[in-house]
Amino acid sequence: MSITLNSPLDMHLHLRDKEMLTLVAPLSAKTFSGAIIMPNLVPPISTKEELLAYKSRILEATKGQTFKPYMTLFFKPTYTKEFLENFEDELTAIKLYPAGITTNSEGGVAGFDVEELRPTLTAMSELNIPLCVHGETNGFVMDREAEFVSIYEMLATNFPKLKIIMEHITTKESVEALDRFENLYATITLHHLLLTLDDVAGGMLQPHLFCKPIAKRPEDREALRKIAFASHPKVMFGSDSAPHPQHAKESCGCAAGVFTAPIAIQVLTELFMKHSTIENLQAFISGNAQKIYNNLKVPKKIITLEKEAFLVPKIYGNVVPLYAGETINYSIKEIES
Ligand code: DOR
Ligand code: ZN
Image (tube, rainbow, N blue to C red):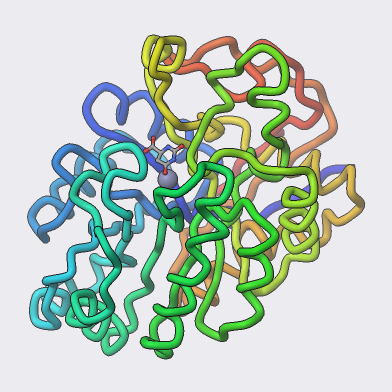
């Protein structure tokens, strides 16, 4: 039996810059029609010039491939409506990081004072620009996301017209919040559908599975699986594929991020097949996102997969992927665009 997916989208992707961009962008562009591109470069993307220049570098790195980079800005509380209006269709979303919470987030938000955030969030509401949020406090690592739910509630109630996307959710508390507020949405990664903290640190420490937010408990993973497999209309796939060079992962002070881009579609297919929910993968990987992001225009790309063993390379350039050197059970057979 072959499985066909139309215009898969990755709604949370790190492509980095320079050699890393050249290495990883074609791997996403091969199987995905488009992706929401994270702005956490050094320095972060915070002007129209930076955004357009980064977009051109992505298009150059994916030349000849059908792939649309949906660009984002790094959130600052001081963006005005005029400033944001000037981006026209070039700006798809704005990403908010709490200060210092993860890779290159030092310039993020500290304190979450609603009045301080109001100017940018009001302008975004008026212009219908979605807000993507890395939702973690600086509390105890296993509780950070659950603690952040009260900040999501504050944002959702103060800005009822703003679409707020809880990025890479990992807990049952976030899943519960989704249905409490009309304007809350979520992305879910592949690795958080697969892993619990046991896989990361229950035996020998696995640096290539270390990411932010860290994988949680079995009951959390179960809550994520339930809404992903049912293709809950407010959730969409976002890989959070976050490449780091091998030396930065296999070192004292391991960088956070799991690199899943080259195998994400194949493993998602395997997972949805295993749980007898393959009919819902199309909505999870494309349909829901198109609706949530205000009828996103997506390039046409048709991916056909079959149950056939694929040996995952041990390394792509200097980046170790998820399941490096292991066999996965679905392969891409055809790509039409
Ligand atoms: O694991 C992660 N890696 N989580 C993030 O939030 C950022 C990302 C990165 O940029 O490396
Ligand atoms: Zn991310």
